[in-house]
Image 1 (spheres, rainbow, N blue to C red):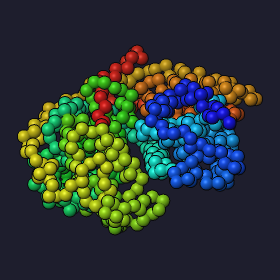
Image 2: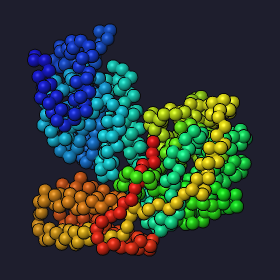
Image 3: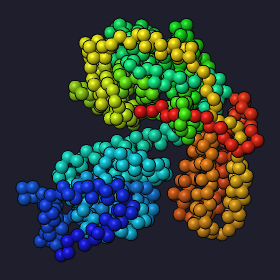
Image 4: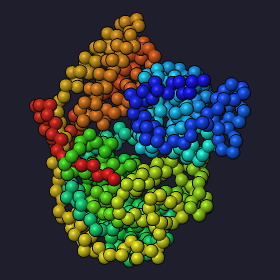
Length: 601
């Protein structure tokens, strides 16, 4: 038997198509152990020796293990992720079953087994076509690749398979399976949130254009919180326990909170230096039923331009706008204006904003990311009076660090994991006043007795005063980075409509020709950085047509026409809002984008 007959050609294919895993393998070659683990069984198939005389398959025929590794017609469009490929038995079974539209992504944590797999099956054609992709066991690459599976998530199926024989080799296979599941859950909730909220958020931004251009910009706050301890207060149930101790330090640190937590803080005798709102939901109007307007009139509100205009308009205190990375300002970079990656959670947004302001010492309070019993939030929160009842479709039962049962949801776990990823690269001290919820990995869990000696060890009252003086009296409106304009998109869409109409007259237009044209439509939709965010949903729908349609008949072409109709309506709508905001429509196609910078960890 020639050892590893296909290794060289497959490695060359990896070098061209998956350079990261190729480089990882090259780094691992010098540290690999003995290569005599590959054995041939009396039954004639290859096996892999483990310790203590055992082998990977232990005499069981591989086909018996992988007989369920199939893809149904319902799962035809999508991606299968395989954790552990051993000698390729399960992978090869899967590749023999899948249709040409289905992609397979393989993550093998052990270099010696990956080399063995690559050495005994010719994968070159599959690698070159992109139907087969190997990943290096590196968190960033795995997260970037799996998070990019947006089309399979929206229009197909994503399957995760773990190689059962590989689980006996070591804990890394279970660890990577858990990591992949976590990433895919985040992808699902982000995709669902996009479908549900994206257009609403961009519409809010367009309605807020005039206000945001006249209100004061936070740009002058950048770096001004250096040396100040930032406190991020949430309305978790533990806030009630810790509020008395926090009152002793409200002058020494910069206290911040979410808009919806303000009534709870007022009830507990805590007054933040500023609040933030990022949620576009109309449900936040309920906060005003409990909010003390006179008390809040002295608290500046940093509002995401994607928040509901009615919620912002009713707020009694100073208002400071901040643009968000998923909105109209998302494509602009450089300069001084912050563009906040809010992460879909006020605690995460506040943390990133405080870091952008220069704070390198941050304390989380009331950020439980879970709850016990029937009470989900501190009293005064807009959910007060709603008794929690477990719903397995919406809630997750898990345990805190003490082993106690707590409840959470994926909408809380996703920003928690994103916060934890931020903390992996943060320089500075981050504390969590732990109240029995889910632990924030990367932060230091402390108790009330640690506040004076660990968190508020330096009196920062003078620096806090200077920071607030800037926030209340030292800010100025930003130069707008958008202007109304007439681009060439309208003329192109008219041409697109005529082209699609001409195709409808053909009996069977070639798919290649239609895909080429739809790719050009996509390029046009994303060419204008101002319009791109509002047209993102239509761009995804067109991409979905390319992804799902084997051929383009009259029905498919009609759906493409309907997407073009929506694009035209949105462009007209956007022009109206820009005109109402008070900005003149210039005669040229030049877009004044001003300056912005990312306010994210």
